[in-house]
Image 1 (spheres, rainbow, N blue to C red):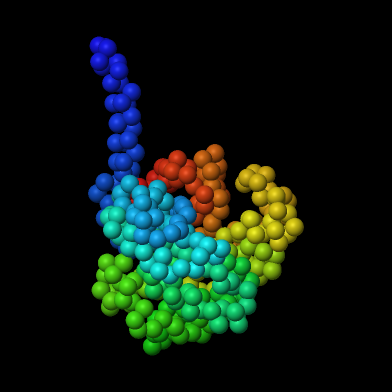
Image 2: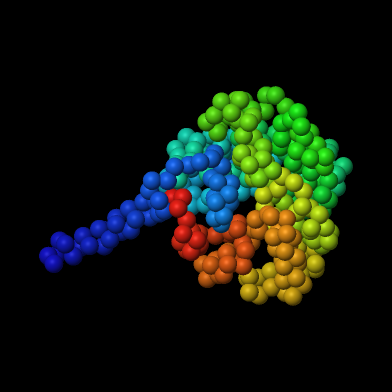
Length: 324
């Protein structure tokens, strides 16, 4: 090796590594089947991984495109962050303008947490407009925090459905989305207004629906109703919210690591996992590089806090075909 070649070797190695990370893994001939890549994966029995999202147009643009987020969906935080629909609309437009993901989807899926909570039916009935304003920004789902009351959860589901001639079932009843909500959202999804109205429905309640709705069973009151709240039709996933669960059980430090849970926390987690399995929901839990395969084998289908390396390891473990 010449001196010139020796000096150039580190730069060549770095360029090769960058090229490898930019190249999509998975099936290079894969073609998207749905708008919501997270739903598409769950329908194929593949675990999904998420990262956080916030801010407006520029933040969205950074996370979009083939070299943006490593995650399958972005959790846009509005429970404790600002309830700012203008920023959320900008964020969604930034994702679109960044270009399609490596999997060929127009954007990563976006699921929002909200400051309205599933504590009582009266609270959700009075505040379902927040769900509808969020949906109208072009997002792909809602995660309802502190889901204690099945009727409150049902209000969220109703708020994410257009009225149908025949309601999905007596408990959910008629949807509440109105004409006009399809305008901006359909442009974000890249479909006509009519196509949006046909697809804007919770999955798997509607097998062709593109909304992914979830709940947090994250305090002792919600835990007591775990089977009821996870059994509401229209949900796709649920989590046990270890941070808030720890506060509720007076164990604020009881959730350090998946293998170091306080016995009461471990019992709470097991109860929510079992309720999810009984009701056919995907279970959300933190995954790390050292435990992601074990978590998947146990039944975790939504990986929280997953680094790119963790998600990569999990995807390889399940032989994912969709590129990432």
